Length: 95
Image (tube, rainbow, N blue to C red; front, top):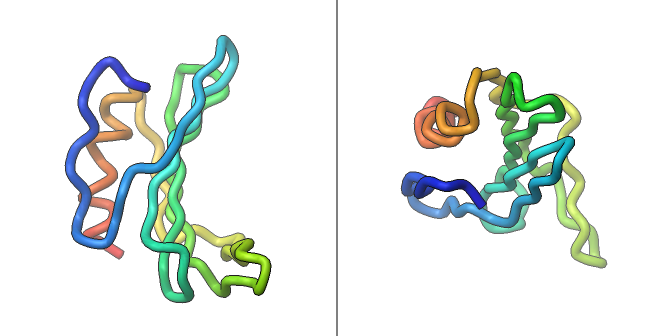
């Protein structure tokens, strides 16, 4: 997705999928889909600011869908995609 390489994430974390269009950007990351895991997202809908949120996974339903907290454990905003992506490893370590 980005024109730059995403940094390595701490053990048990990985970069997932992402989307970019003319009007929005998302990039997902997280841990294995399990209770006590995390799901994170970098999001921008104006390309002026990039928000990073990391949410705890509360439960995994029988159908495999996740119940994710509506309250992020990390929530920061950056001016560029590169700064937001680069900040993810440190935000993870601060959890």
